[in-house]
View 1 (cartoon, rainbow, N blue to C red):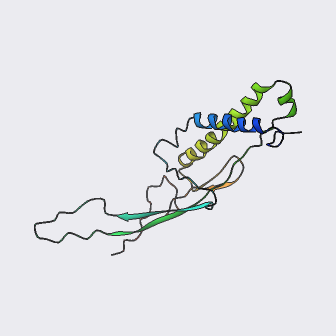
View 2 (cartoon, one colour; view 1 turned 45 degrees about the vertical axis):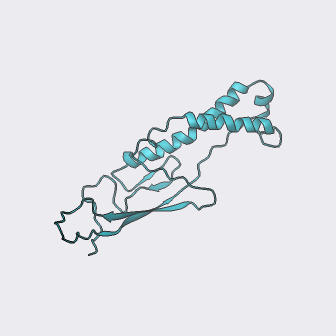
Length: 168
């Protein structure tokens, strides 16, 4: 099957990028923009892992009388967790027949569908953090085991999460 490539039809490939990105930007990213998750862009050539770490400190101030020294706040390292980014893809075949027999509506439909697939996949993966909040791992649609445990190695929905020992 002869597929679309940038050497054969460079103008079409440029237009394909525009159609794909437009569909991607128009796809609803409800969960990602809900405030329930943190979006961390990953720049090119910066590696595929990120460590997320918490710093535990006081949430409230203490009373300070006139002339008294202020109470020293405690700050300490909390739990940390390492995230590994993975690449997801789908091969989109645009054939010679599609390009030469006036099947552009089908081509545009494939490109816009591909633009939405990335956003849909991210949204699904993010919702799984809550869907599977009672376990520490789940098996994704590709058969891979995905770890979703918290920093204390327990599931998200657990009534007795452990606290780090306070360093005094």
